[in-house]
Image (cartoon, rainbow, N blue to C red; front, side):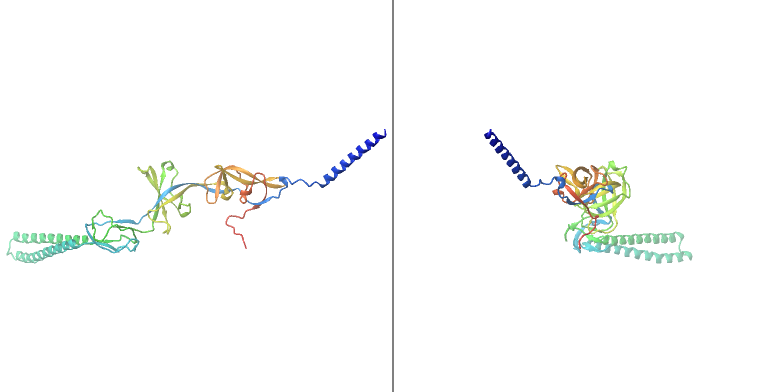
Length: 377
């Protein structure tokens, strides 16, 4: 009996000790880490999905042409004896550019002038003779037939003199063709000929271009025939998409080009441009119409595996969290994408810190400043 009591007391004492040790250990245990909901929210800039005017447009290749562009070719044959300009020179209308050897034509003019003087002398003699014959006829000294012969001789000599004078004038006019002059004020292009070369009416001597009165030549597919009209807006772009000039259509061809099977349209460039030249190839963005559509800034868009996504600041409890949304976008217009599917007006898309975001991460939305606003002291 005594041994059993002692054993029971020892067992009870041991149990009480273990309970105390456990209580002590529990008091020393640290608090569990915070859950995701208790994490500090990351500040991010957001912008609302807004309705903006979005252009329905297509881009085509355009060629710039000048309404004042000339290929200079001679109207006579001969050897070039003078080249008075070089490529790139600015010339005035009528300025002498080149000269073809005129010696043969000068000789022709002089010979014709001699013929003219000879016919003139005959005409003047017949005029004097006519005056004498007329007086003799009035005095009854000569017959009517003799008088008529004098009249005919005068008329024949007058015709011959007038013809010789006209031929002399023509030869002198042709002499001017041996001097090659600028058809209008402009810039001299390439000069493929050299002094001493023999040239003919098929030889290209140079070009003269005036860098104004430019037009953009654009060929449109025939499927657009029912939509194209004068007045449609046209933006001329460089290779990077930068706008060089803004204009509008002012000509639509009534027929289809047989070779290209396209419709030629033209857009005049109203002012001289330092960024466009005759013969230059550029892109032309033609706007068919504009309509209101939801847009998102380019900065908000990420691409993963060929798909496009944005993060939106979604309300969650008393705060906000990042929520990744798959979106379908149209071609960019300036700094925004038109939204075809995935977002609604009013959704707040996240613009900053996107590389650090994951689904469900707490965020603190900060409204982004309006486009064009400047910050700083």
